[in-house]
Each structure stands twice: as structure tokens, then as C-alpha cells.
Length: 113
Image (cartoon, rainbow, N blue to C red; front, side, top):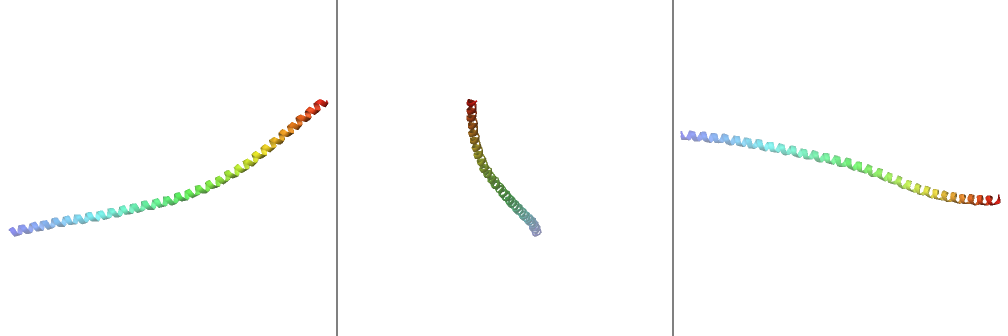
């Protein structure tokens, strides 16, 4: 009987070891799957960030081009404005000269009459 009890124990222990081994394999497989899903998530996040970076670089280039264009327009307007200010100054000076001539002539005609 001792040998049959010993066999049962070893058979029972064997069953326990098999169950533990099976659980261990299952857990390892589950861990592998979890790690695989995690790598896939990280890869997708990296791909998404790369796409976003490309999009932002394109938008940045468009903004730079637009800014350069507007800066050039500003320089053109400033140059034109400077020319117009010079013309206004010249016309104002001419008008003042003409007013002086008119005042002088009015003074001459008042003394003659």
C-alpha cells in the first residue's frame, strides 16, 4: 500500500506540476501577446507622430512662404509710402511758394490801387 500511496502522490504531484507548467506556459504566452500589442501600439504612436511632424513641417513651410511674401509686400508699401511722403513734401513746398507769390502780388496790387 505504501507504494501505491507513493505512486498516487507522485501522480498527484505530477498532475500538479503539469498544471503549474501549463499555467506558466499560458502566462508566458499571454505576456508575449501583451508585449507584442504594446510594441504595435508604440509603433503606431511613432507612425502617427511622424505623420504629424511631416504635416506640421509642411504647415510651417507654408507659413514661412506666406510671411516672406507679406514681408516683401510691406517693404514695397514702405518704399511707395516714402516716395509719396517725398511728393507730398515737394507739393507742400511748391504750394507755400505759390502762396507767398500770391501774397506778394496782392500786396503789390493793393499799393497800386
